[in-house]
Length: 225
Length: 225
DNA sequence: TAAAATAACTAATATTAAATATGTTATGAA
DNA sequence: TTCATAACATATTTAATATTAGTTATTTTA
Image (cartoon, rainbow over all chains, first blue to last red):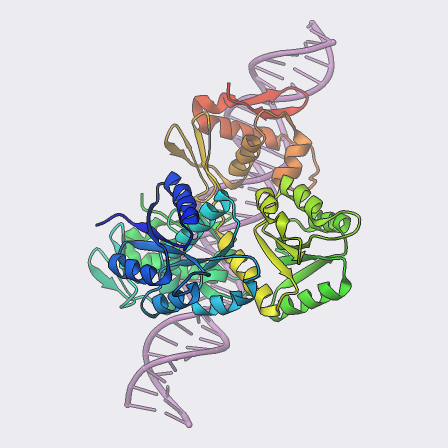
C-alpha cells in the first residue's frame, strides 16, 4: 500500500509549504493541489491513500465549497476547511455539507497539528471495515460478529456495546461514557443495565469474554492480552 | 454525579439569556457569570461539572483573557472565546493561551450550537498523556500502570493516589492535602489509611517504591533520584 | 390484531474486591 | 531513652460488580 497522505489544497504556494512543513515534522506524508480542479484530480488519483484533506475556501477556478460538495458525493474522507476571517457566516452551511472541522487563518502550527490529529483519531475507526481483534471479528456491513470463525448472535444493544468497547480498545470507559455513547441519552436511575449486557456478551464470547475487563470504580475496558 | 454544564460568561445579561436559551433547546445545562471574577468563582465551585466555557472577551473587572489565563493554570476545560468584531487580531495570541475556538458576535444560534457540539465532540476523548517517570509509566486512558514495562495492578485508590503523587512530583504533600485531593472530602477519624495505601503501592512498585519518600511530620513526596 | 417470542431493562441477592480500622512493631528525632 | 510518627500485618467494614430472576417493552408472526 502506498503511504497514507494528507491532501493540502490552497492557492497560495507559501501556505501549502508552511502546512506541509508542519505536517512533515509529525511524519505525515502530504500531497498538494493549487486550485479546486487540481484538488479533484489529485483526490481521484489517490483516493485510497488520502486520509484527510485540508481545504482552503477561497480559491480561483473552483472554490473550496464546490470541491467539498463534489468530494462528498463519493467519499467521507475527513475534511478540514481553512477559512480566512469574515467567512464565518458560511460555516454552518459547511457543517451541513459535511465539513468535519474548521481552522481560521492565521493559525499556529500547534493548532493545525492538533486539529488534524484529533480529527484523524475520531474518524479512524469509523469506516465499515471488518475489525478483527484477538479472534473476534466484527463485520459492520453484515452486522455480524464471529469468534474464532464461528458466528455468534448478538442483540442490537449487545452488538453496539461490543463495537463501542472494541473501537475504544485499551481505553477504560466509564459507565457514564458508555451510556452516552451506546445508549446516547442521559439516563437516570442507576441500574445494572450495562452489567447485564456485559454479562451476556461475555457469555456469548465464550472464553474470549475475558477480553472485556472490569475496571472497578470506573467501568469496562476491552483489551486483548 | 451532578449534571454536566456549560458556563456562560458575559457581562450582558441579554446575551447570557440568549445563549442559555439556545443551549437549553439542545438540552445542555448552563451556569452563568456576569464578570470575570464571578466566572472564576463559579468555575471553582463547579469544576467537575463544567464541560465547556463560553467566555466573552470584553468584560468589566477582569477581562476574558485574564480569566482564560487563570483557568488554564489548573484546567484544560474546553474554552470558546466570544469576540466582538475587530478583536480578532488577538486570536493567535489566544490559541497559544489555550483557546479552543472563537465565535464572533453577532452569531447565529446554529453557529453557536454547531461550534459547541463540534468542540465537545473533539475534546471528549481528550487524549490524556502517558506519563513516564523513572520507569513508572502511567496511561490514564487505559488506567494502567507499568513498571519497567511490566504492568502492575492497582486498585482505584492506589491508582489515584499514585497519579496524584506523580503529578506533584518533587512536592511534599501533606496528609490533609492528599486526603482532600485523592479522597476529595474531608474525612474524619485519624487513621493510617494513607499509610496503608502507600505501603501497598510501594510494594507493587517493587524497588521503585522508594520513589515515594516519607516526609516525617508532613506526608509524602514522589521523587525520582 | 392478539399471542408469542425476543430483547431491554430493573431489582434483589450473592460474591468479590477494596477501603479503612486496629493492634503491634519499628524507626527516627529530641 | 523516650516520645512521636510511620510501617506493617491483619481484621473488619464498606462498596462495587456479578449473577439471577423477573418485569416491561418491542418486535415478530400466525
